[in-house]
Length: 298
Image 1: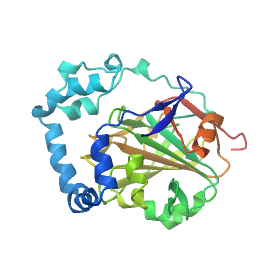
Image 2: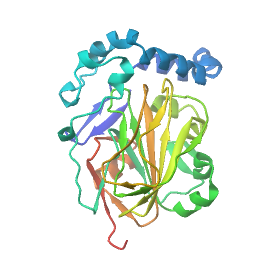
Image 3: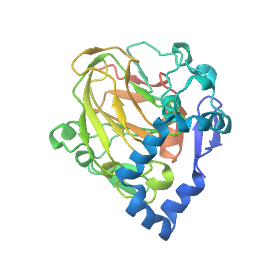
């Protein structure tokens, strides 16, 4: 059972997890863990499922999925009948007015929809994955020179469930470097898995880049793949001027994670998010939502 804080309702709610029985079996039982290591975490498993989700055969799952998880299709540009496959639905674009963006230069917005956890004053050698498990920033991005610039900074972990909008966006104006790709496994990024797989983020397939933000200094942007995520698709152009709220890319089917690292003394995070993170609760947010602000001395 996963409890998170819903900022809209200001209540703690229970997450309706897609495939919860399967996740608990795979990540909590001896037989399931063996199956995980032999097959589920492998690229082939996610690739095969990705082929299915890209095919017309998967269309029949869309209507059932939207009803079971109460997905608001009024936000979508396409209607259910217009999607050509489940992945076409999963990577759907939304109407511009469904995710208003605060364009104030001093406002920090969420890069996407999901459940947000924030850690401040990070120790680069002991970044918290979940209570009891940590990892090193240099292992996550495989670049110690860049990692060393973010000591005592702030780490934002945005977990996307299969039910979420799966496109991720830039949080500020600026210029983004070329994406660096690191091959890896395909573990789930659900808290059930995070509690059982040490250094999970450093083991999974991931992509990262350095974003030269206009108002928040340099930011490390990391996208982590997961079970059944056939691809991480980057849609931005490296070296080209970017506007706040512009799409950076999207995940194909599966739960996934976006991680942002900010340098020390660059941002304040909203109090409710910090308090819930300290108490072990994620905060449900949407793309473009106010989650913090710029520190004036930048």
